Image 1 (cartoon, protein in one colour):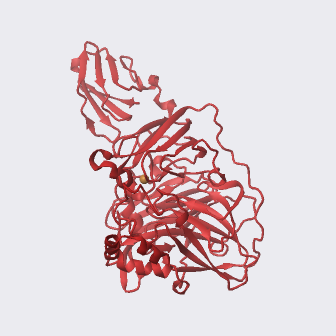
Image 2 (spheres, helix red, strand yellow; image 1 turned 135 degrees about the vertical axis):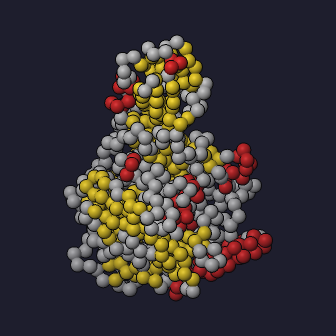
Image 3 (cartoon, protein in one colour; image 1 turned 60 degrees about the vertical axis):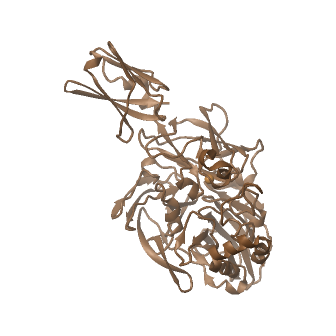
Length: 592
Ligand SMILES: [Cu+2]
């Protein structure tokens, strides 16, 4: 029904274009709205648990549409990956072996781990090799996920199937909650995918017309006649969902990205942008066995600017070709049919009234305030860039070999996110969980009052959060912050930050010898090296954190001093190498 009214509202040209582009997918979409087509049992990924997790990134195929074999990627299978069950405080090792014929990385989304184990773009796993990070699980019990994060490769590799859920459990959690995986506690990875006419996975377009949950098209799930926990993850590349139940019943949100809220929050909608997770409790106690209802996305309720809403941009600045031809945009559609069945043994039949109060960050003694601004590059693309990109963060695009922000171990910080584009961007930061302080000056609503690592920033929004960079520092390997619309991320809407241990980087520690001093360090413009050797005898080289020799001109030498102008350098750590005679000295330099 929805797609007919949408098609009839399009111009003839746009309609023809839309049909040519997505003729068969329109038919598929019709299937998702019809009960008769909800015929595939929901795939529930197997679990892995223990202290050692072996993941093989492999090629596969999957039939999304009868008659078409789609080449896919999966972890330990054709598509998606096993759900990792990890206990809080366990020491674990993850052995990730890549066999897909091209490099990948695996990011543990939401984890508080050292940057070298984070799986960002710098932890490349070449084909036919194994990456084995080991760390202690410090996160709260909650729903996390793993997915590729390679430079310019994230969208295609996630789209081809690489994504898996992680459930962190805390044996000390005292609350009565559904915890039996696949019985009353279900992983739901919500995705839409785009295909070309031969049903090869396609990217960088707005034609993600096929809806799937756990890679199952038109799925149904038998739920027991009791309170059930659904772990919702938006694993799509771009699309936000507005999740609700088809009879509009209320449910309880119990957890967001980083774990439990302070109390269950009753509502009948939750908006999920890409990368976000939410755990909900749905009560089926009073439903007759055999009853069917749907988990739906109410896309008609998404605000303008959100990918998935009816419109992005204005009547004059229209988002790229294909967006309005996609019948899912602005439409309400089914995600999953829920069939009520017999209750399990020992069912959970009540929702806790209260969880623990959260130890949120207080706003006293803040060490740094930072501003993250999303803008579009209108220089080459005009105002169309406001909807189609390329988008930038603080005016810059991502570079593998530069660092955008330097912070210090223990630094408590308030970050302000602003967005002057016409697209809502889900901001994600690695390493930490944060607390939203305010959204456009207003206290956040309950679903944004717990631990978060993704926050959708609407056009024109100002969102402030507070966090602290604890436990992990590394003078070379950065963490990432970025837009979690994977196409934007791949296009460079990403930045990096280093967490430095101030105990190791104080100026006095950098003065390695009696006769050499460097000041100021950190510096914003010029490092002055004072030395007792005749400076002309000294060979001076500066390398970036990845060992690349940099051009240090103009380098000014005077008797006993050398000045290095660093005003063209990105903020970050650099290595100064001095050579005189057969003696080498290396010193760490910091550009702020
Ligand atoms: Cu974005």
